[in-house]
Image (cartoon, rainbow, N blue to C red; front, top):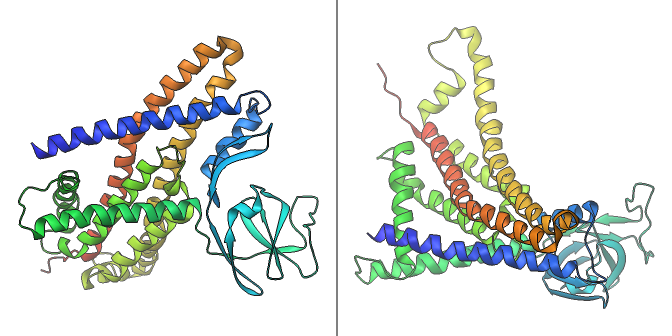
Length: 373
């Protein structure tokens, strides 16, 4: 009963969230389509979608080209330059991403080009470009900034701490039936334990890896759901994030591997001796490269494709305006985008489940004890 009520609550909550996201994005497109601020060509729409998919140093919601005003809020820029650490707010770039605005901080001149921060050479006060629009008098700096994706990960971590903290306090106080957000979290925790960890790792060893599996599952799931909000997060659509998650999984199953695992990997029994070195190389490549690669690409590609499809459907209100009129094209766009966004709610859970399930499967393969005859 609790699980059914929790699932109903999730469906209602995130359907409303997805609906709000679609209409917020749709309204944003309509604002862009206002007089003096139009995005109505395929090239401009493509650039708009690409900007949404990329990471950025601020949350930029809307620009009125007629007045030059921006609706956004900045994030901290933290960079390590040739002269040491420099910090400031991203608003000092004035939303420039082409290297035209140069920020001076204690003798260091910094600019932003294609979402990357560059330091100008000594004595330079503006960026010089070659024929391919590459900066020739500036170099990249070490960027530790709180970007939009970093902010999203911190927000997801905070939500997990608050949610699981409340669930833990309920257990500590002797509550057998959780209340509040715990009624949503407990069925999912039990699901990860009984349907993912135990079948793939085994009854004897699953508890050791439950902390990692729960963290990965809820971290990916929450980030995927945040990506459906008007804030425009695309954290799991950043290849650097999925690479790090896959590397964590790889390190865990590589360092947790049993003696039988390494014996079968490096010197496979039951095959001719001459083939064992070849098979050892193949097995190592599989565990070190192929399995992590499959984890990171699947999550990255599916979440990026989902965002791209939603944004493309929203853009139908502009691209199909001449053929069907503003009312029909807008209605068609919102209905289709809403439908896809509801599916994206399922995909958000499904991708978290797949990543966690495959991670547990790889861990189970590494810690499995083989029978010796």
